[in-house]
Structures are given as C-alpha cells and as structure tokens.
Image 1: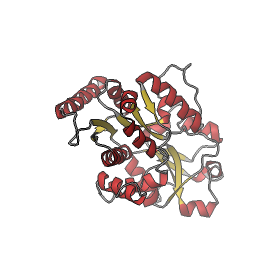
Image 2: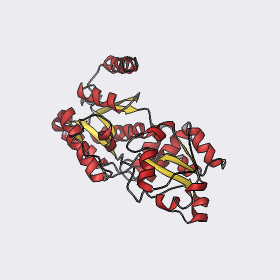
Image 3: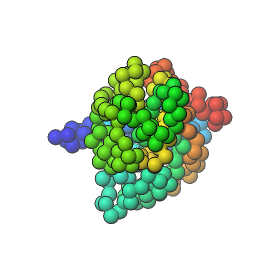
Image 4: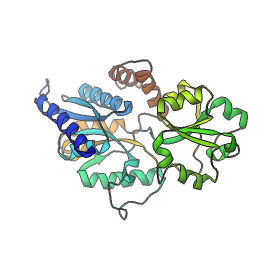
Length: 303
C-alpha cells in the first residue's frame, strides 16, 4: 500500500513536470530538470545549480521539490524525467544492490567510490565527487557539558555515559548496521537511557536540560542554534553520507558547458557553510534562492 501511495505521488509530480512542457529556454537553450527531496539542503543545491547554469550558459533549470525520498529521484533520472539532483554516498548501503556487490565500510573515499561506480552504471549517470558537506548521523552534546567533562570524541563520552540520557529519532534505536546496538559494540558502553522522539522535541529536550546528548544530522542548524558540539567519531562508526551532484550522462556529454558548471561545484560547500544556509532558510525564513545567491556572491561566483 505504501509503495502504491509513493508511486502515486511520483506519478503526479511527473505529470506536473510534463505539463510544464516547454524544453526550450528564453535564450534558445535547453530547460533541464532538477529534482529535490524534502530536506532543505538539496533544495538549496537546486538553487545553486540553477543560478550558475542560467548565469553562465543559455540554458535554464526547472526545480521540482519535495520528492519523497532518494529512490524516487533515482527512478526519475532513470526515466529521463530529472536531469540533475543531489544524492548522498551512504545510499549505497540501503539495499539498492546485492550484498556481494557492496562492501560495507565507514571510509568516506571507499563509500563514495562504490556509489559512483554502482549507481553510475545502474542509472547511466555521473556521480560527482563530494560537494564538500556531509549529512550523516553524529552525537552532539552541549558545549558547556563538553568543556566541563573534557569531551571531544565519542570515546570520551563513554567516561560519563552512565549518567547520560540520549535523545534520538525513533529509527536509530532499531537500525541494524548504524543504530544503537552497533554503536554499543563499537564504543563499548551504553547510555543510562536512550529515548526515541520527534527530531524537534529531541533538540528541545537538550536545550531544556532534560537530556545530555542527542543523535544529530551533521547539517542540522540546531547545532548552531543551541550551541551544541558534534563529537568526533573516533572509532569511525557512522557511515558517511557525503553529498554529491549527479547528472545524466547524456546531458553532460551533449552539453559540456553544463558539465563545466557542475564541475565548479565540487568541493565548494563545507558542512558548516551548509548548516548556516539551512539555518537562514529554516529559522529565519529566507528563501532558498536568496540564501543560495548570497552564498555564491560571497564566493565570488555570481555578481
């Protein structure tokens, strides 16, 4: 039933794309389709791609937002309904391939290489090198708590874990490879309590002092908002989710000027920079276009 529901949403979105119809830009170039998931970072990346392509070429980029999840993005690329998107290297571990095809590792370079090879071949697309930012699980604590107890790494946290309550999204407690059970094996300790809750409530809980630690995504703006410290994953437990642009090979082969723009985005944005952009959008309610444009102007890539 869930699959039917998701398929219906995707079909409706693709009908909207088709209804837009005109594939010729105002300057006589092409109109390329960028697909973005629900999270803010792929939406900001869509605006960055759109601004640079339209500034440096005769082409235009149309952005479709709020696609339910990455598999729908990949499916749309496979059907040539999307041309460009932002995806994450750790997706390679989410049952897209047979076990004998994928080697589970937390090494960022090896994970990216597998994503580039496996997804690239399966969907006939180029998976670029990392944009620079990562959106993966981590453990965060208050800066004051970290300083008081001399904590900089997840191993350090083990010294006081018996007095620490951890708040997390509900799925992490049950996840097999990179969930709580695996974390206990990797680090050799458990928390006094681990509570599953909504992400927004999780951050409120640490702000109010109800818990001492949370599982955070590395680009969450609440890390800045609540003065939290991301702990170093010194046992390399969490799999990497490095963000990369992807594009259909047919597009970048036929339009090298577009490939040149996409090349210029590799390594452009650090995790801290993306976190700040998400904060401006989600907490100060600025538009993704305004935030992306301001970032590119600061980098000297746009007037």
